Image 1 (tube, rainbow, N blue to C red):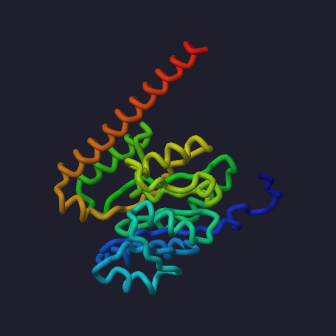
Image 2: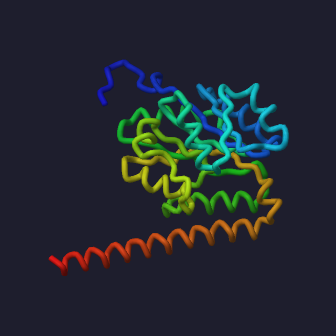
Image 3: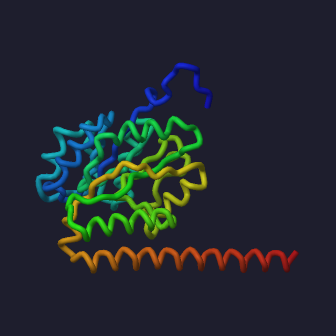
Length: 242
């Protein structure tokens, strides 16, 4: 991509946020306000059939409100299909977006080799346990066992379409999507933090939630190793046949 001297390539980027919701009346306005404050160009809310006041509270703050009951990744795909942005941010309804978020995304995507990225994780609670969990998430990201969807993954819209979006029936699809995206170009972890609600952690219990996250990550790693082993066996068999 050629950039003319004196031309600000970030000014061309229209940024759309896709926000999936399901009974998020308590949190959704805070999340949408944070996106507006950061200057996101378009907000697309995709509701999965909330029985509370989610849709009514989201509508005044959203540009588009859609309905999709096929599950989280079907919601994200539907929102992406309707969004008009050059960049798509997949932002959860119980997460606060950083005020510098839009400008940080535009700045990193001014480099043509970067196809997407995500934000560092923080929590709305200042207690030590959540600071430690956030640090653990940073380590996990460095090991490429992340990021997950609560870190506001963003991607160039063109790349998203070329990848045919999210797979709706895939295990840990947010992580798998990131892995596929890394194969297309640079994936950047930004220094700015999104701030996730601790509501779900408090509801299930911090230790139980943390162990569940690491268990799912372990299953993902084991599954990938088995896939690689099966692929190696198939390659060996093919060489023998030849």
